[in-house]
Image (cartoon, rainbow over all chains, first blue to last red; front, side, top):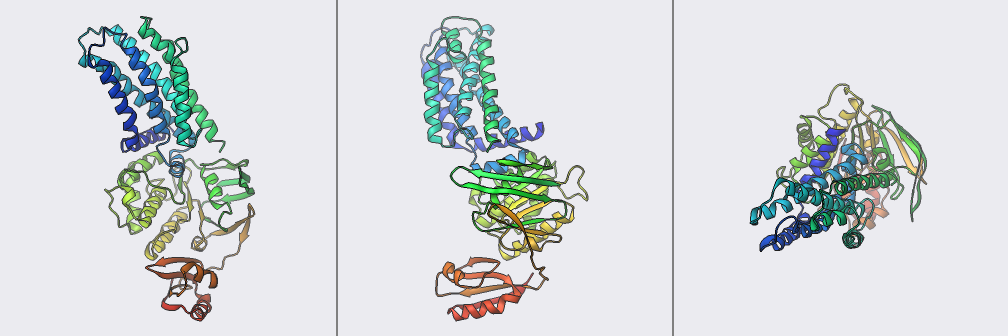
Amino acid sequence: MIGRTSAAARYLLALLVGELRVLLPVVAFLAVLGVLFGGDPGPPPTPWAASALAIYPTAAWVALVVANVEDPVQRTITVSAAGGRGAVAAATALVALVADLLLVAVAVLFPLVTGRYEYPPATLVLGAVAHLACASAGTAVGLLCARPLVARVGWSFCLGATAVVVTAVQPWLPPVGTAVHALSSGGGVPVGPALVGLSAVGGAALLSWWVDIRR
Amino acid sequence: MVRLAGVRKRYRGRGEVLAGVDLEVAPGEPVSLVGGNGAGKSTLLRIAAGCASPTAGRVRGRPPVVGYLPQAAPPPARMTVLAYLRHHAAMHGAGAAGPTTATAVLDALGFTGDRAGPLVALSTGNLQKVGLARALACAGPDAPGDPGEPPLLVLDEPWTALDADAAVALGRELAGWVGAGRPLLVADHTGRAGQLAGARTYRLSGGLLEPEDVPRGQPDTWATVLLRCPSAPAAALAALPPVADSWDEDGLLGLRLPAARCDALLAAALAMGCSVVGVRRGP
């Protein structure tokens, strides 16, 4: 079962690599990072507050592309091959989380390469965990707005954009608000928000599976 | 053995498509489904393959490995034939020999496309052969008696878009599958699946299954007829006696029917003003 789920994840990853649609959010995110860290961003971790905010919609967009990477008829083939709808739901979440880790690594390492400030390990951990909290929250939003829950990609976009805009600007709201707040106002490592974000991904995958097996 | 018990399926806006279907698919006893357009054959196959859930009723005894071929699945945009077969063999858990098994099926079906090229570049017939190879190789190489549960093969109109040689080759592949003691469920309007050894044919109509008597064909009891008709192929087909299969062959109308009814069809075709280009008997 685990072998077949990881094979399904590798298959989805291979489909994604051949898919230009996933480049769009990634390029947009890199452009934002370039603007943020191009000049003098100031000492860490404050500049990361902006990149953590930017990783949220990026991760949602990437998760949406991952979940919708296959045509619905082709998806039935993948479901029968991987041994069920649960395996495909798990593989989709897995691939989206791998993409999150790559985005987090890029966002955290970008100012190290271009910047002139000291980045002690504790600061790096703070930045990485805060970004992970925001990225996983984005993944959860993306999965909730994608197939099989939302069939039409136009609705997916509207719902996702609304969810991101409404939740990103509440500084008290975990995981994004609290994680960004920790970066901008010198709080502790936002482990709690990161766990909330990862749990939300698990919950979104479960909900997708639950709705799918009722079709 | 796969058992469907009291399976119902209701779609919003389409009403009840399946109204309590009971069906058993046993190893070595292929089941062939026939029925009109929209009768619910594809829905029933999706449920049997585990890709859709019944609104009511149950499916029991589905093996862990299912080779499923739906109709008209658009191929992934940029994946090559070999990469696709490799990934699907891995998902099926077909082992290291899975991809080799799939390419062997491609050879047997007379695949003529570029294996290192993308799926989207393939013709409809070659794409169908890739889908068949993927499904038939779901359990890896043929084993006399599978180590675990034998895999289930679910095919939706597998003879679609195949040329005459590939169609005969597919019959041989499926006979081999059934001969290895593996269960097979096919929706097939050409009547070929019903001729497999031990096959049972059911007609799906009004959401229910009825056993259907299919006359057993001897190897030479099928006729292939090529006609050039003055009217459009669809109009000519509607005016002719019923046939098992029809296709367009470079502007000619190709027909396949039991040889016993061939003379009556030719008489009707000539009376309509069609010209008979060729008649062939065969399996």
